[in-house]
Image 1: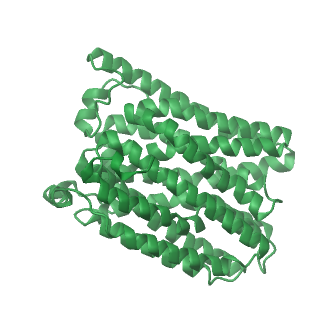
Image 2 (image 1 turned 90 degrees about the vertical axis):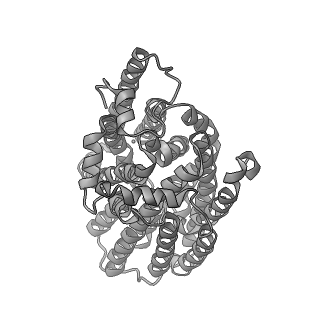
Image 3 (image 1 turned 135 degrees about the vertical axis):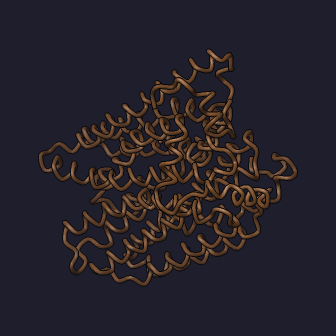
Length: 457
């Protein structure tokens, strides 16, 4: 399944290096995975000196918000990487994450330690945002469109399995000793450095020409502020509408995290991490082979119109679990989320390439990631407010019901956008099953998507 010989000969060396590195790097990422960190904070700091229920819930909301909010830094990394060697910068960011994870182990379980942990966590996730943003440009350069979904699927499969195993390891260790993260996190950081040593040998094919195009087009250099994000959305009509529906749909998905974590408040570390992290990541490798061929054959708009309903179904299962109080339904919902995450991980990493020209790939990815960060900043605190209002009234399931309603609206938006796109393609005698704008830019998107009136880790 993962054999390099299944790829063209010129892609094999870098694919092999990436596959090995992404088999090791997730060990350090496992320490800062959102579901795992939320369980660690909720339980390790419960009753700690100076930490009351209000401050703990606020910190928990901040931790849940961090992985998505850190994505706001994406446009900064896109601007900083402009005209610079991409693999070298990715490698530097990976090492920074390892240092920060090791530093978390030095923090005491006090109120000051809790907020220091939140700060280090935000820095680490912001650096990881840079890794994800720039990695898209490496994949764009090293693998042609027909191979990208396959490669992204293999990397995601390996990463999800390692993250699942790391989550289990942390859960078992913390159940044995709540201070386990003090010695476990440095070990995971060292493993991350080993993966980084392999990644540093990856080469971006055609990088000199790419850097030359970036430097030659200096007037299009991304800004260190949000202006570059606004400019992309202003000039690319199709991408703007797609991002609009992603914002609605993604908001519903992100609202789920806080009530899902609170539903397992009294569980052990192992059970909490199992349902929030390990189970979804174990299901993902099984689901990726289902989603990857679909994405490879279709434009990301068509893909999202199908894929979105998997999240709607998972959220509906959470509504049922909260109404009935049956734990097994929560586990089923967790597995269903893993199935949905599998498709989302693929579309997240390479979907923007169906809109972006090569020299603007990182910029388009940064737009997607930055907007995800904005909704990630809003959603956990909104979910906390809903939970604090409804849960004391015995209306906890309504929190999940709100998530379901927003998810469904977003999914319908993708369907309407896909239907409009099909009408336009038929009018231009373009086969609907084709991917006419892959690798294109704003101009090509407009010609292929003009007339679309409706605008998603």
